[in-house]
Image (cartoon, rainbow, N blue to C red; front, side):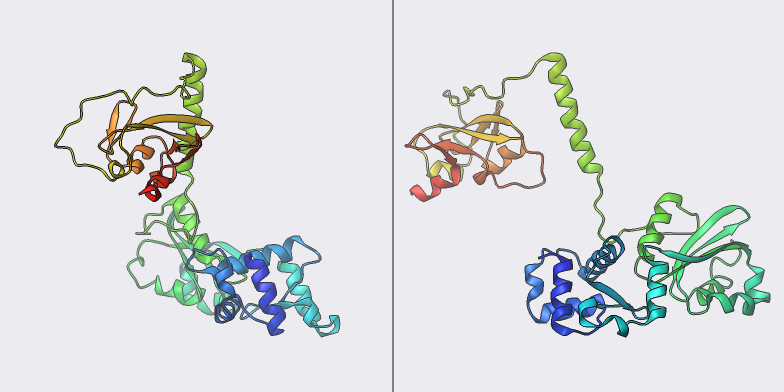
Length: 328
């Protein structure tokens, strides 16, 4: 079940406007949340994001934005067209897909101290992102649920002598303020901000890019210098001298002689051997567990080698080595 399907189910059952936290709380009470693949700490944000996208991109969206403060959703099918507030429809259409609804830039800090009522009339009770400048140089970026109060605080806190100009970007709601602030901080790294911006649930692609780069480099190397025959069976099960003092590994309980094993990964097959003492020899290196041997091939943090390596059973079939445990 997706977050969107969950919201649809809950709103159908309740028939009342709900914000996404209420939707999730109801889903938990009915045990519906167990059917959603959610690992994040704030699933209601994911629900909200999917509903917004659905409303924005689909004319036949079943969802309706019923109230702005607080944010609530309901189903179009639960009300008649006449029941929808025309003003509400108009505002919903106007701001559909928008984040910043009003802004002002390059204002002097004196406006807050000597003529605060002027700006108060425009930003009172509103939320958004602001930036402080010393001359033309960015000094600080922050978010505020009550913009006017936050800016006045900065006239007397540790930043008071560090800025003389400011910009304001008012948003429709507070849903993505933290993400916006984090984004700006990571791009600009202002002097006055002590912490680097952190995203709520974004994945850093650097590790995946490095892995892809290595894979492409290996392909290029094979093209230039020839492909190694990874499918050729290893001779690692030839008798070798084993240190008698080496700890006997678990695999030794299930075998009476060395056996060949193999592991398939990204189209290649890698061969190794389980030695009589239960160690695994792969590529002239001895490993004391199937998992450690598998990690030499599959570049991950953790892996269960018992369900990666295969051996040939009495029927001539390649099966996972965890089947050896059931033979005893």
